Length: 394
Image (cartoon, rainbow, N blue to C red; front, side, top):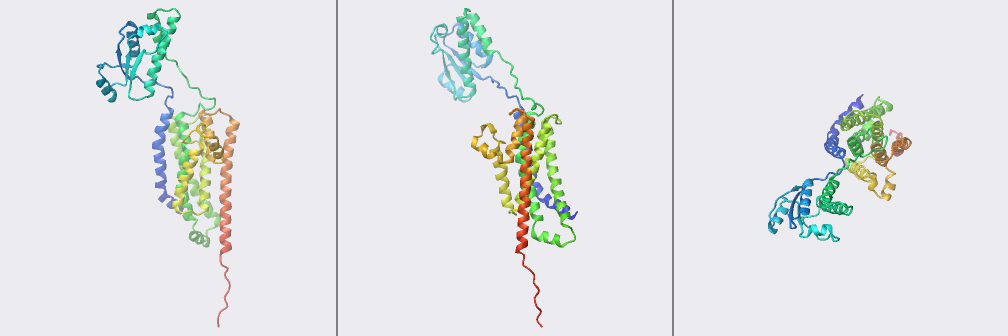
C-alpha cells in the first residue's frame, strides 16, 4: 500500500486549503439556510408616527386612535425645525397632519386634501402607512354609503382594516419531507463540492502522475493494476469522507434524519459528487499547473453556480441562459432540488430522468478523461527514442 500511503501524505498537504472552503461554507450556509427557513409571510412592523390634528373633531380623533392601534404615536411639538430634526434622527419615522375640514370632506364627494405627510425617504413602512390611511377612509365611506352612522362606520372600518387573515403556504406533494433550511443547504452544495474536490484531488493526482514517479513505479515490482487500485482507493476515501461530512451537516440543517423523498436529495448529491470527481480527473488529464487548477476551480464553480440557478433562482434567469446551462450538470442537479423543495411540481419519472442525465454526465466525463489519458500516453510512447545497438570500435 505504498502508493496509497503516499497519496494520503500528499493529500494531507493540500487538505488544509481545501477545508477552508468547507469551514467557510458551513459558517455561511447555516445562517443563510436558517434565514430561508424563516416564516416568509409579510409582517407589518409598527413605526413611530407623530400626528398633528388641525381638524380637532370626533372624526379626526377617531382616526388618531385608529393609527395608535397599529403604530406607536409619538408626541412632538408642531415646529418645522423640530419636526425635521426628529425625522433626521429617526425619533419619528412619519409625520401625519390631519388637515382642517377632514370631517366635512370625509362625508362629502371630494376626499382630496384630507392629510399632509412628511418623511425623510420612501420605504415599505411609509408606503404601508399611506395604504393604511387610504383603506381606512375608503372603508368609512363604504359603511356610510350602506346606511351606518359615522361612529359605527369608523369602528367597523377600523376593525375591518386591522383584521389579520391567517395564511398557510402550501407545498407540493412529495416536497414536504425536506426542510427549507436543508433544501437551501443542498442547493449550495454544488459550489462547495466542485471547489473542494478539484482543489484537493487535482494536485495529488498531478504529483502522482508525473513522468518521473510513473517511470520509477513502472520499473519496480509493483503491477500497474495495483498502482491504479491504490490511487483509486485514495481518491474514493477522500471523496467519500468529504461527502459524508457534508451529509452530517445536512442532517443538522434538516433538524433530524432524512425521511421519505428527502433521501432523493442525498442521492442527488452523491451523483453530483461523482460528477465532480470525473471533472477533476479530466482536468488532471491535461496536466495543468497549480495556478491553472485554482483558476479552473473558480471558473467552473462560480460559473456553473451562477448559470445553473444555484445562487440565482432559475425562474429569474433568461431563456438563453437556461438553454446554455442545460449542457452543464449543475443545471439538472438544481432541477432535482427545485422539485424536492416544492418550487416545481413533484414528478417521480421526471426526477429519475434528471438524475439519469446527471449520471450520463459523470460517465461521459470519465470516458473523455480515459480517452485523453490513452491518447496522451500513446503519443508519449510514439515519441520515445528507439534504442539501437551501436557497433563497438575495435
